[in-house]
Length: 327
Image 1 (cartoon, rainbow, N blue to C red):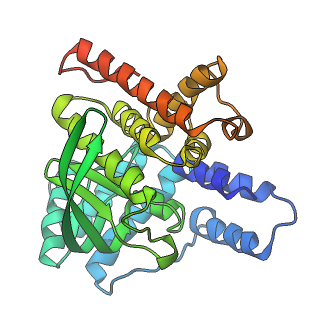
Image 2: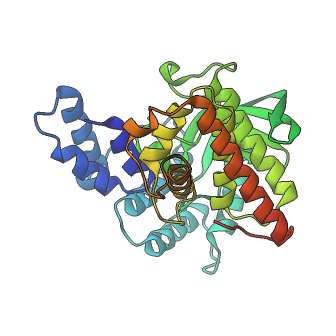
């Protein structure tokens, strides 16, 4: 089985397609038979069991409400209906009588209570679905980051001891999850997970795919404050290509996750990058096989990444600081 393809379906928010792909594999090994059973039991069997990293019964109820929401949206149920049910369940847990309360108002209340219990709670949307990040421990370090045409001084907050890592972690049983995010006060890095998935601070995975990617977001928040997530991700991924010493690693990742749907900023930005890179490399704007990409020189890929980044920057500057995007 091609695990990259399998998890790409999960990244696109389609566990049903991932499960169907897994089912289609003939003569599955014991490993993939077990994986098939885990996915069936969690998403399609009707009686899932969960492991909670806390004994607090109130917290468990909140986590379960989100798990049920994740299951619905990841198996192609109606997203609005799933969010309505989430609001109702969380309102009951919070003993709220206000029937008009929004999910954002509810998550504001959750944030306060989790803080009282010794946790940080970050609600909101990891596009296209809701799903909080809940953790206990925060440490910080300062970095100076080189970007195209500027240098950023950033503070990175290293987060650990998570009890929830949003919907992608749930969709992949912890194999994939958001590595971090950028906010006005600095960068947040998920320094958690199994030892085999830990990365070193001097690796390109951290220095490029995390640090430069997120620092680019910080820069764009200032220069283009209204930019939509799809354009933000497009620019940050191009910065990765510019600085990555092994760009085929990124092209492979972008190729697998590419999806022509603007509602999914990460897969959509990968789709646009792979299409435009193909135009530059092969003269045709459509997705190419990995074999073709593997024949290209590293400096060419990095140069095309910079060309696309500069072109996009110029288009944004022409439209002024209120621009929301051009891809």
